[in-house]
Length: 394
Length: 62
Image (cartoon, rainbow over all chains, first blue to last red; front, side):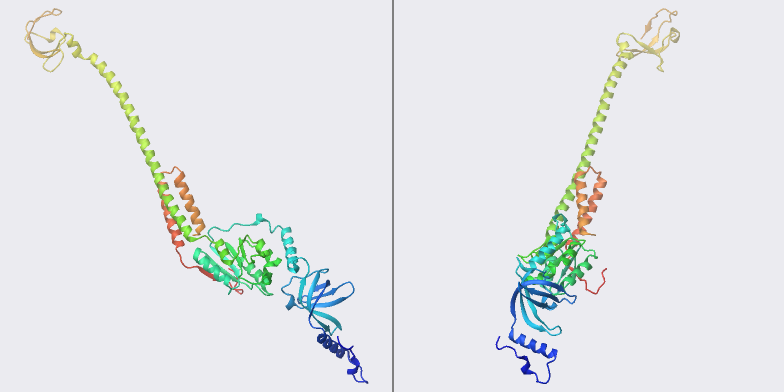
């Protein structure tokens, strides 16, 4: 570091330096003599201020250094914890107000397995798991025919364009509700949460949280536990399309479905209208066949009923025929013709009245005599005394 | 009419027509309802334009 510092050579013999002059000079010397450098150490006394600035010490067995990491440098980082071994890339400087030598940290890397990210991720994941939010039983099914599909994404990114194109092609029946959000940068977490909150109050059937490509650091908002919990609390199924192929985000884990790309998410959220058209064709066929089946059943039933009617009638008629035949035979036996056939004859006057007594047949009376094969005209020839047979002249 | 409900109802109509011993009057009534719903569903399907609505930050939710 060159010659030892001789601060007093610069001051007048009469007057001492002011404190400010010293710290200012010290700062200049330090900053000129110590370029930005990587320092390795253990974090101690970590404190994040409301302003977002971080204050901590780096130490090893024998010494320690005050460090500050300003919000504009750390906003994408999960906070480290005391005891963590880290590398910092920092500019040595002098904090003049306190007269403290300190490092202004520009980058901070953890030497732990997977680094700070991994650590924060695992911590949040453990907390989500503990609350049952990663339980596969929580996963909801996508609606078959969604009416309203909401999208949370950057309003001017490729993700929105892709999603809109896919849904427009597959299922334009739906209404697409776009809720723009900042998906990267230090306002992303709040912006995504506010968009989710807004959608949770809308009548939406399925939600896509999407983002186009980007570096792993840009995934930060979707690895935030706050965003993950907001996604888990959504009242409708959520499709997450925010991860990398290799990096699954917390948002992916809590979502009901994880899609590789925004286009894939849009496909998962919608049926294909061509297929649904075909399905309608099948329904039309089934309708027609169903009606045919129904009417055939009715016709069959009518036919069966007709058959039964006819057989019933037939049966009845047959019965009657038997009865009639019997009656016929009976009647036949009683028929006077049968008696005539046996040789009897019936005498009747011109009016057809049967003449049974002698007094009805005085001499000269014309009458008709019925015998078995016909009728003859006759006249009484001789009147007998009653009770005695008398001759008849034909 | 919600498309999902439309298809659900259609499915129910077809099942009844296929399985149940309906009288002709009822079968015809179901058939007619089915044809009408099918027509409406197909009309919905042939709608070409996707409606996109942007919900802005300042806008209050409906």
